[in-house]
Image (cartoon, rainbow, N blue to C red):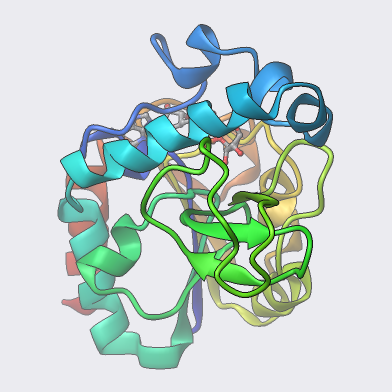
Length: 225
Ligand code: APR
């Protein structure tokens, strides 16, 4: 069985990473148009860099949870028949042990040099304008896909959805495109695992409610039984 799993901020919530649109979410404390657009970066790069520096630093305080680990067990059983497509920029899937993870919105622990176009694994701050390890320039920006920019690797995702037997969406509100349209692109069966109904809940053949750390291990156990 070929499965595509889409994950959103809800899968990392129980690891201690704030989601975006829930109460107390990131977008309550920050205007996304001020910190997550190329225009905002052009206007005030320091503000944008400090926003992502704080999120990158927060990654040292959190660990993958039972939902991330359950997907690793599923990958061990399915091998290349499982693809995890994530909107998340954290590295908790990889730290749990997942190999086939595609980040459509980029990664916090990556810096992109807009002078030489190289990308570098990056754990520290960027606000102090460090030099690019490749070209020496000081034009490193967060390797994050901002509003108005094109998500990474959409061809790969579209192909996987067209060939999948099952599409599962975990911990996403279903309001941000193109991810919110994946349920329509998926050829196979569709399942939503979410704390609350997402905006697209009605488009899924089945929807289950509850925390990811319960729903995902239960679903994986069911599949592997
Ligand atoms: N278990 C399962 N689902 C959860 C949990 C949990 N413990 N906690 C929250 N959720 C669900 C919420 O009900 C909500 O539907 O996760 C979803 C989180 O929604 P958002 O905060 O909107 O996050 P997400 O859908 O990932 O955002 C999509 O928007 O801001 C941009 O680029 C950013 O990738 C992000 C995109």
